[in-house]
Image 1 (cartoon, rainbow, N blue to C red):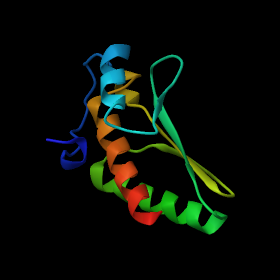
Image 2: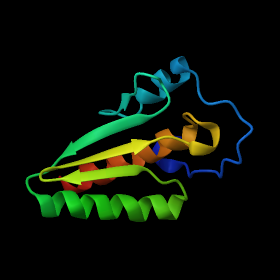
Image 3: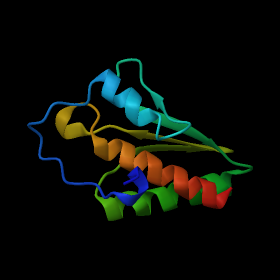
Length: 112
């Protein structure tokens, strides 16, 4: 089953964050995303032709996050939207972060 076909499961904490190697394996399934230097988050910068398109993408990403119950940090500016995922309860990365990254990628592919 691909990441876009999965749903996020609530993380109650008490589990270890993904190792750097495990995160790298998930990155292979989420093109365009990058692992932070500390290995505790992933991010991607999405380019747009104007501010309105970036804002619209951010809103759609927020709606997706709300449905899945897993929320990113979103930064919007003229011609770009940066999305960052990290699981706060475990202070690192969880499979949920990569599920959301794959779903955000799928949404971006539909709008561009």
